[in-house]
Image (cartoon, rainbow, N blue to C red; front, side, top):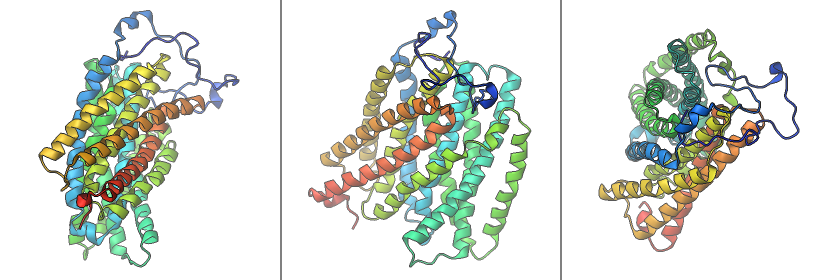
Length: 451
């Protein structure tokens, strides 16, 4: 059993909506299987008495989550630094739809890996990964599943970014070759990064189980930050190569290969009884989250040239707030599945306070290495810190309320909460950061404005 949880009284966790009668099993929306992709919706049973000695306080949360968040900061700084460089590349200046694609694709890819992390964390805490046969089936099934999700979602993200770019800039005509470039780059980066991150997350969670570390405290931040770096690198390099080979059929051939691999991975998932139910379910939150996060892409494209450093700061601010909220949501989901009570107030305060040293480390790093071409004044530091704390507070409250709400209405939070949470937080963080930059600039600090 993972640490940091208190055993709840028998009536402390009501899993049915008030007034609802238990439904026959065949009428329930989800049945918890070995893949941790669904759940039986009833009042959760109590844990065995011998497990109570494993429960510790929130200090265990801090000791496990803080290192992963610091690693997350490094990954997010690298991602921001990479974006700050890539925005000046010819492919980004020539095909401006890539600016819209970046936050949409990063959010979408992060959702896939974090959903995988949430499902595997719950499976680990329920003991489903302790059996080697079951564990191997879950690993291969989920790796195939995430390939199907990544390829289809990458295609949708690419097409969606092109459509948004055409609507936002109707005077700019985009060629068919550029459309194929955007879609192919999106699908390739989504597929390759899903393979890399999927393997990494499966290994990380299995090792966490062996070492008695609660994966709920470390999995989501690692998936999010490393996923951003890998996906952004592959996207930029692939788009740049395809731009160089624009006159050839490379983009078209690559696109056909990506489409042709979807049935192969789909067949592999269909043969695996542990994950086959997810082949056709769980798409709604992913698609809606992509639509929501497109708002962050529009804001970023609108102001990225006006405020220097915005491209570097945006993924860091969004990533940290989203990761803290995801840790909280993942922990609550595990508590609901196990029938134990989360220490809501203590965990919220712990995660809020953990944001302080993480942001201090970030500001010291970017100031010491002069990252982002900004003059790091006191006004900027205070404004950014305030935006960060507000965003984290919103993320925690949203994570809690969304997890409990989805559970109440008989949906597994592991498959539904994180996409909506991270997408909304992306829009909120990007908007708040632009507001803070505008306020600083209007207050006599024009150094943040690009010339």
